[in-house]
Image 1: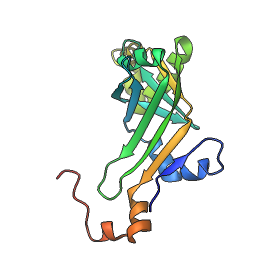
Image 2: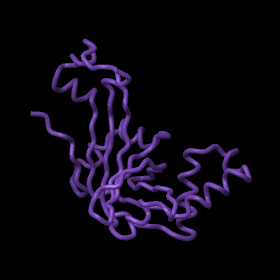
Image 3: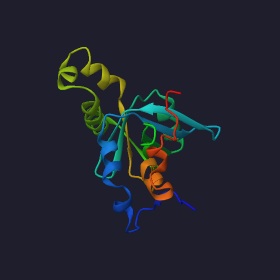
Image 4: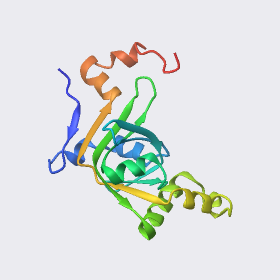
Length: 175
């Protein structure tokens, strides 16, 4: 039986399981799926810009957003970043308790997030940079308590000897 890779902080394999490929996708210009808990206890899922520094996620968010309101009431959060390429699916999910940053700390963190997604020219543009800074007036900091990682190519190699990719057994993502 194949078991998902689950990492708990404090276990020695934490660094080993969040391997280089996983760290690389966290450094790329990807969009995170972010889940918060609504007032009714139900999930709220949104797409969000993020920055992964060291082992901490930073998210730039508007204070008027549902996710910001949810996190003020219940700081539990999950963040997922993945790659969707047939046979090469790869991803990271992290969860824990969020810290809502405000004021100067939020401006600095959100600015670092924006710099991951926007060019220096865009940030310096008087119409663009200040608009993003005003829009994303909060930042969320997450030091994950739990990690889950997956790698379809590694699963294929371990479980099927590479058969899925070699024989084109996986349907195209566009199909």
